[in-house]
Amino acid sequence: MTARAVAAVDLGATSGRVVIGRVSADAVELELVSRFPNGPVEREDGLHWDFDALYENVIAGLAEAVRREPAIESIGIDSWAVDYGLLRDGELVGEPFHYRDARTERGVAEVHEIVPVEELYRRNGLQFLSFNTLYQYRVDRDLDDADAALLIPDLIAYLLTGRRVAERTNASTTGLLDVRTSEWDLELAERLGIPSRILPELVSPGETIARLRPEVASRIGADLPVIAVGSHDTASAVAAAPLSSPHAAYISCGTWGLVGLELDEPALTDAARAANFTNELGVDGRIRFLHNVTGLWLLSETIRAWGEDDGATVDLPELLADATEVTGEVPLFDANDASLSAPGDMPGRIAALLDASGAEIPGDRAAFVRTILESIADAFADAVRTAGKLAGRAVDSIHVVGGGSLNRPLCQATADRSGLPVLAGPVEATALGNVLVQARALGVVSNDREALRALVARSERPVRYDPRQLTL
Image (tube, rainbow, N blue to C red; front, side, top):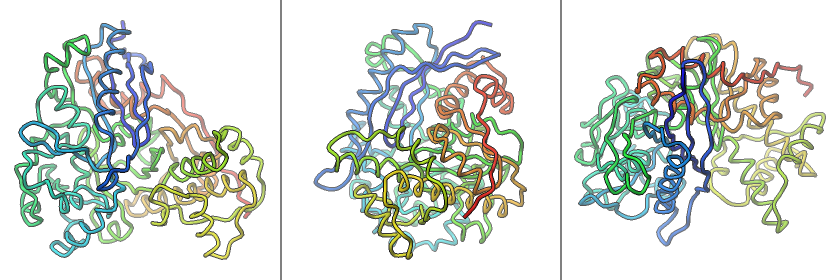
């Protein structure tokens, strides 16, 4: 069967990319078209996203994709969660805030004064994260004058098509989606002073949003439909994760490590809330029962700080190779400590945590990197064990997808510390999930989700890491 082509826009918190996906009944292949940086920019009023640059990179990437592959049939967009842009009279009101901006702290206190955390969890099923969208909405001074609030992939879809929608997998991260009905919780919004008019029509993965506006089609070079995918990048990644059994856990590993299980129904127990596990929507209405663990952010910020100290780029592959040669016990720190969440001197803050615990700070960079990787892996392993206990499921393996699947020492450390085999790959799981949902909507592949995963497994065989005996 001749492969058919779609374009996927995949936006992460540190970089974005546009890829061409070519799909047949037997295989799926990706071609990277463009990659561009993304990250926080400091403005007078706090941390923002440089959204104009992001959007122009998306347009340029789509134009190049169409130039390379004129047979592209549709476009899908995914991104990180929780952040949004406001529209007034159809125009964007300023730059979207970055989720690491400190303004959200005031929002947390105000929301919890109105609605206790226990009630919030029963209604939205979300783990507590200080940057969840409802906390941002609560302190947004422009909200009352806005016509709509659109999460990042929905905002880009609006600029491409002119239609305002909210895709459900990402909407489930706002805190305003009813975890049982997958519809907006308008009563909760009203109690929090969030005007219901800003909450757009909900759509599900696979629905066509609209065709490109004529002026956008002219810039891109084709008149194409935009199809809703799992627009929360983790939803797309999990959709493509080639889970080997119903008892497999997943880790979508990049800046964050999203660690959890795929469930049929939400788990809303007090124990799940106390463990800070979230119930987010996945493709086909499945529940992504997971916990956010700080992931490769710790390593990337450390490398960035060392590069600034050296006045030169630090060779990460060389450092990782050196870290694998470090033998014996290394000190661990809490990868989820709140002091590690903001940009800035990451080596110094990790050293401070180690010092406060009475641990010896590693004396060279290779050992320091191994401490980081082992600490992340320890947090991953703990989250997997907790997920299994809370869901009443005996976890038999862990699938690591995303950029972290290429980090061999991290994958091995996760296997060692969990005592479970780790199956690593695909690295581009998010883009694959995006592409496959589009292909399914176009009738190229089966509607069966497990058949989609089998297609991924045939196209890119995971690398297996078996646990070794730890000598600590």
